[in-house]
Length: 363
Image 1 (cartoon, rainbow, N blue to C red):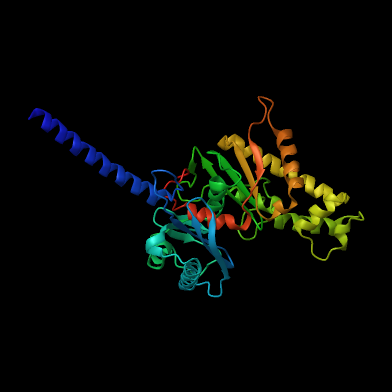
Image 2 (spheres, one colour):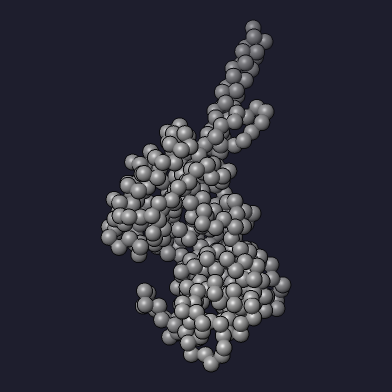
């Protein structure tokens, strides 16, 4: 009798363990979309990443390993809140049809990156300069939930670009990262101790709007003079070069150009044009100082340089690193690694998808 009870209890225990194991296995597969062998069942899950820019929307379906299955981009014709939502709905359907996937069956989550001030907790766009007709605290997550069948995560586009690089790009092994994006302006984002830095109002990380020269170069859009992006953005390098060329007595080739771009300046600097070399060296110096300041404030292990200026490649990276080492204190040797971004124009879309990853490392 006693022996029968022991056997029965053991059998029930093993059945319970097996059921629990099955539940855990099902959860793991559904959450991670892991590619497994042996006992684990292979099952794919997908994420939707949406990158809303000032002029276009990019949308992609992405695996939980970060691979793009399908993606499409369309220019924004109607910049109203309803117009952008309808464009996203159109792109969702287009990507689903092309991939043969189904929202309910295959998509585990979605995320959106957009320039502006974001209330990520409530999924609202507090303010977006590119969309002046949008309502204050535009309920983007709520509206897109009806399109996506899941409530998407909403984040600032600089943050999504960094998340992409931390997930599968230049900083995939780092928990402390700063990203500087040198384009029309200077975008920036920070991950500290494995957490995305948002701040009390979702406005943390605005390095481009730090003042580096009191009463310096004007910034008409902000009403503040001497801010970082008026000196080291790709746009500002071209503007500064054109101004200097107009007033210079040198025979710089910049004087022959009707409209000077950042690419022009870097190309001519590589050829030894004296004025271009001077401007590029000043840019390197300022970027080196900014990188030093990021290390002093955040004690970061990795700084990623992105944006249009990185078309200059190793020339840009070497110049920044040289000035970074020059301005580093003598208390110890530099340990922070400065790198170029790897993911280019897909980073916003990939990082937006990562917001919804069920097993994401960075919160």
